[in-house]
Amino acid sequence: MAMRGKPEAPGAVTPQRKIELFSGTYFAACMLGGVIACGPTHASVTPLDLVKCRRQVDPKIYTSNLSAWRTIYRAEGLRGVFFGWSPTFVGYSFQGLGKYGFYEVFKYYYGERLFPNTPKTLVYLGASASAEFIADLALCPFEAIKVRMQTTLPPFAQNLREGWSTIVRTEGYAGLYKGLYPLWARQIPYTMVKFATFESAVAQIYAQLGKPKESYSTLQQTGVSFLGGYIAGIGCAVISHPADVMVSKLNADRQKGESAGKAIGRIYGKIGFAGLWNGLPVRIFMIGTLTAFQWLIYDSFKVYLGLPTTGGH
Image 1 (tube, helix red, strand yellow):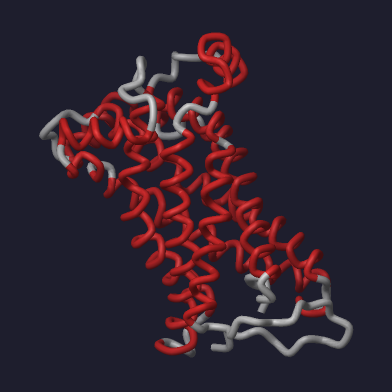
Image 2: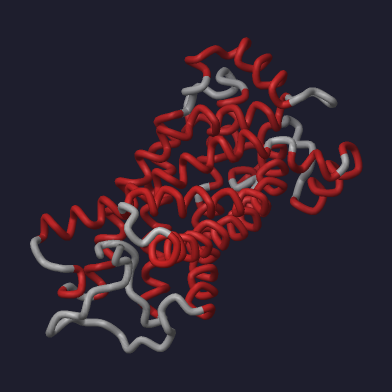
């Protein structure tokens, strides 16, 4: 299966490549690109995430998102609206490193070295699932702190440092990972859809445009990345939403010593199937926008380094 880029067409606007493709430096650059793409973008939508998490745990807490932000801002100011940004920033920076960096690693080794004749979509799905499995090990402690900070009133901690020390002191390090299985259940399907849909969407966009990717300027290529990212974001928001709700509920309502399975059963008994979809419209808007900008930033960083954009080949 040919995963490498095609020869550049005459007149294509492409920067001078300084990093060898699929080298250790290339994969390290992709990891750094993932950090830059994920940490700041997730932190920037903290106000949406804050309200989403609180409404998932208690649907009656606010009548609408606007009323929620007004209420929080009047009581706590701008700091309150962005409450939980620090564990979000750190956690999703680590996650971005693993998600994007290891995706590139696994995509190359699965598609080029181990299973060269495998259909591309299967390679994308396998590579993204493998990458997210690793990435969530780094994300999970910070996600646990973020969710508890945002969903307990008054907050159990005011910042990342305090949240980490409080959980470790009262529950041990295992307390930082009690939401790992639901996190995998949320994030692995999410990332599989995110990457496979993005790759397919970008390929279809170039097919509709009628010319190969290399014939377009890098600015046009990153524009395609943005559009493909938004399409992918909508799909992965929907498929991962029930698990997202359960992660919020588990981190806020799992009792000490209670197994994950028992806690999930107890929580589902309280909220039912409909409760798993609470807050979906907000999450579609949040994740669609978030994913689009992540792909834009990630591919813009690759272009800056003289590397080709993702997808379309």
